[in-house]
Length: 283
Image (cartoon, rainbow, N blue to C red; front, side, top):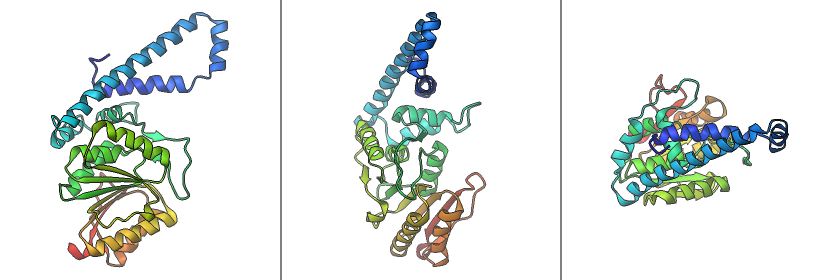
């Protein structure tokens, strides 16, 4: 099992987890009573799941150790996951780069079953290709502070912090998400990473130079955040990378364009739902 790559291990882990999470114990007991040979089959499945989990632990611990000791530089870390590619696997809504990152971080693509605040969204982990595009678009360096607004479990924030020298701050309203992100971040001991448990409207964003939003909220929260970013844009040169629909989300950022705080970069076909905005006064 340990000879498999981290991404392949994660794919197996997700398959085992899907089966385990969708079997009703009471119904399984009835099946075993009717067909005793199924007990051995279920035991083999659980043993396989344990082997995959142990292999993931070892592979993840190895990468974490390399990051903690500095043996894996930000540039090399970025090359490692980007180099796996962003081609979606047949029959799976995933890519090799996503499998590697999510296996390393042990973060599922979609997290449900947790309370959402008013105007908040279900936590969806950012796709690796989008993280790569953000890094290419903004080129964050040592003098930059990147905010991940509505960071969820922290896939984007941790990946960017490990892939660059920029200061990265993840802001999240959901306490369980923040706790999960902090536990994950502590494994890698990244000195440039911080998670803030707060309503984004109560956070001072004035030190930010780049802001990432993966449709984390809508309505009046999105309106308030767009106004806050417009105020920051009037004072300093910033880049806003906002992904999501125009209605009741993107329109609030476009309002800041019409008011002269931000300007909108040309839309790109590969990222049709992404708005890249920059401080109008500094362009």
